[in-house]
Image (cartoon, rainbow, N blue to C red):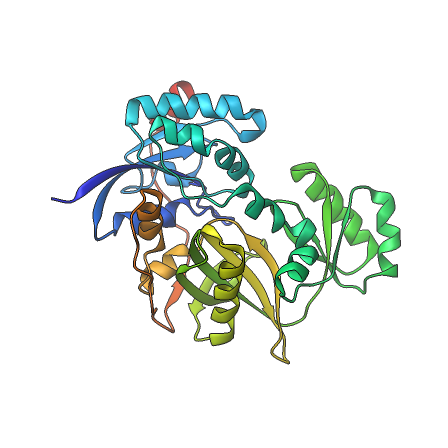
Amino acid sequence: MKQKYNIAVTGLNNTDNPGPGVPVIRGLREAKDFDVRIIGLAYENLEPGIYMDGICDKVYQIPYPSTGSDALMERIEYIHNIEKIDVLIPNFDAELFTFMKAEKVLKEMGISTFLPTIPQFEERHKAVLPEYGEKYGFDVPFSKTISSLNEIKKLSDKFEYPILVKGKFYDAYAAYNEDQVIGFYNKISAKWGVPIIIQEFIRGTEVNVIALGDGEGNIVGAVPMRKQYITDKGKAWGGITLDDKKLMEITKDLIAKTKWKGGMELEIIKTQDNKYYIIEINPRIPAWVYLAVGAGQNLPEALVKLALGEKVKPFTSYDIGKMFIRYSMDMIGDISQFERLSITGEL
């Protein structure tokens, strides 16, 4: 009989700006070597993953990390006392620092995680990406951080339009003039705060890689893809796996040099003259992870094994030409579900 694990997963907002939680859970439901009971952790009571059939066995609402790490950890401890969580998989950049910092506390409770170290997390921030590229020998776009509107007028001294305006956690917009930069600055800073990252616009094809590192410099699995359909938020609504040896070499090299621990996503621009510029390094599993599962690499299953201290045999291949296409559907629920979650924080 298979071992059954209680696994807590965040990121249930399966909208046009999807979190990775639902596809991570789908991968775990298809694990070959163990069974799962899924405890969904939701920040908002209208996250679609809460109400989807066959996704979560139990859902708890948790406070945003911005309310303070103590409140979040108290809630996790409360849930753990009921559910006996074996593994916790956080899926948002903004929550990772709290869970990384609490890794030892969680372990003492009996909750395992497999997350990047704090130095790994900090050094790949968009705000310091040029230093990261120089340190490890990767091509990255020129960028600059700004913290006030007054600095925008000086950007034309160092940049040519268009430029990318990015938030420190999420959001990125192409700006074609100073007025657009001001608008995006106000929009992003109101949501995520400062600094705002101004990045050189590299023309080419965006390609992405999902990868899993074992923390010792070895790559457990990696699948590259090209976005085929992109939403107005820049998110992939469709994609296809690629046969790109250079992309895989870059990924393996990065994980070897940094000894990356956990899941990651590389966002890369491939230019017409075959140069590869890393434009972002996301320190967790991306929302398109189910494509990797469909291509033969169940990275969520491997992540759970690593978290539990098991030896994991690296994946050596994946199916090329596998596609994913997202779709929207209307789910029918009952107001009683919403009321119960809103009042009790549990469903």
